[in-house]
Amino acid sequence: MIFKPENSVNQQIHLPDKGIELYVKREDKIHPFVSGNKYRKLKYNLEEAKSLGHDTLLTFGGAFSNHIAAVAAAGKIFGFKTIGIIRGDELRAKVADNETLRFAKANGMRFEFVSRVVYRKKSDAVFLKDLKAFFGNFYLVPEGGTNALAVRGCEEILNTEDQGFDYVCSAVGTGGTISGLINCSKPGQQVFGFPALKGDFLKNDISKFAKQTNWDLITNYHFGGYAKINEDLVMFINQFKADYNIPLDPVYTGKMMFGIFDLIKKEFFPKKSKVLAIHTGGLQGIGGMNSVLKKKNLPLII
Image (cartoon, rainbow, N blue to C red; front, side, top):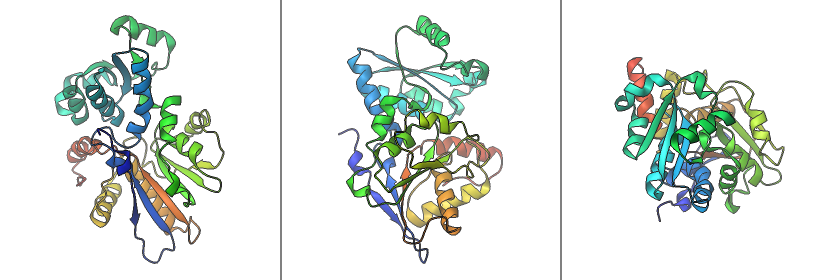
């Protein structure tokens, strides 16, 4: 089987004398390239694209987008042509130097680089009509993959063995993953999201899909915004891998785990709580982030 969701097992993180049980759900183990929440989000979208007779997927993303890499890989696996509308027209001449874009290109993705001003029109009906006139017919996968079908896929992350957890934690990008977790969570469970972006607009996006109110966002661990990182976070990620043999990506899961550890230290979770952290994959972004860290003479993620 190409994808192995059964590999998504709960791995315990031993925290001596903390009075908290912490586990990580290893969604990153599902597939090397279409891992974690990207597998969950694309599962039903790819089925829908096939059923509608589409042979081309078009989506949006930035220079280090896990979503762009995953769509390109999934397209190659399932026989779709793929088109990526990439934020930042200055990247046109830098594909060979960008690990994410280089990977997507190697998997057959065609790029269209646009300015940040144009990129903001990604949900505009006229802009999408112009894209269809230029590229021909395609199946649209939104930025980050979040739509109703993606949320449906993410509702399959939790299973019966997860019903005993008091808290479920997830990194948040576009809100699709946490929406699915909220919808499949059980009575008495609380779902916490750790946004990788600054701002409170995500609550409105999540509310469009979430069917329950047992959730909240913890907004103190974005490290300055999307794809922003500092030496403290790098050192935490490296130490976490050394201690538990679990790699973390610097944009999403690294920040979430940093936040969870900090909250445990601050006794945010009541004693004897059981906490489940969702590893949403995204490990392909480590290479690209290391190229940025190297330019800044900062420690690298190992």
